[in-house]
Every structure is written in C-alpha cells, then in structure tokens.
Amino acid sequence: ARAVFGFWPANQVNDDDLEVYDDDGKPLAKLHHLRQQTIKPDGKPNFSLADFVAPKDSGLTDYIGGFITTAGIGAEEVAKAYQDNGDDYNSIMVKALADRLAEACAEWLHQQVRKEYWGYAQDEALDNEALIKEQYMGIRPAPGYPACPDHTEKGTLFALLDPLPEGSAEHTAGKSGVFLTEHYAMFPAA
Image (cartoon, rainbow, N blue to C red; front, side, top):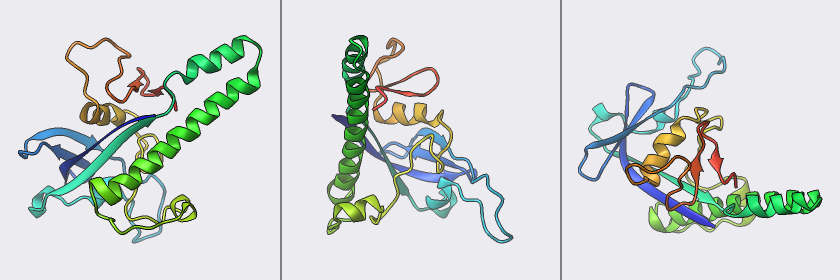
C-alpha cells in the first residue's frame, strides 16, 4: 500500500469555494464545492463543504487536509492473469482484496492523522465498531461522493497532494502510485 497526505491553510471564499494557501499565505489552489441539491424544508440550509471552513473575511485562518491511498499497484495485472487463465473467481478476489486493503489503508491513515500528524484527537481510543460507525471527530469526504460530488476536484487535490514534474506524460503517477484518467477515475482503482 502507498499513501500521501497533506495539510494546508484554507478559507471559504465566494460562499461555496475554498481557497488553499501555502505556508506564506499565498493562494495555491481553489476547491469548488457544490451545495446539497435536495429540496429541504423551509429554514433548512443546503450545505456545502465550504460552510465548515472559516470565511476569509472572518480574519481567521482555518485548515484542511487530504490524502490519496492505494493498495492496488499491480493488482490489475494479477487479476488479468487469472482471468486470462479462465479463473474468474480469483480475478474477482484479487480486485476485492485490493479494494478492501485500500479502504483499510485510508481508515488507518485517517486515524494516524487525527491522533498523531494533525493531532486533534490524540486521546482517541475507538474500537473497530466505533470506527465503522464513524464516531471519530471530523469527517472524511471524498470527491465523487455525496459531500463532494464533482469528480473534477480530484485534479486540484492531486496537484496539491502528489504534484508531477513539469512535462510529465499523461497517465503518470506521482509518489502515491496513483494517476487520474482523462475522466477523473483513479488508477489503480483500489
């Protein structure tokens, strides 16, 4: 498995966007977040992830973090070899195992971030059941899922987390071992 992670100063701008800064306060990137698209009862807001980060005009600096994990490097080739030999069961099992290991890596890294690297929950002592129920402090939204449905934001996140050297070929992975396809799918998928 491989992973990269990072933390950046950030502020909400233009209601739905996050401006991300370098350590000197210079803008690095802008993340665009959609508002919830469901019809809500009167008085109930349609939230955006940006609503949970301090607005720039508040004068406060807030922070965001992100990470990329994979446990699928080489899994596609192994699965294809099984499939080419008519062994669909083991082909499917390789893909499923890589997927579960990638999720376990993400869960572990998120815990390390909370307890050690960012350290906002140093005394956290959750068992597996509590982790599965997401009883930890904070959230772990992911591009392409309901809290952050726009897949194109992966491009900005990858540029922040795992930048490639200038002139890198298409489908080149950085330190994470993961690259984005032209349709913003992550490869390897796990």
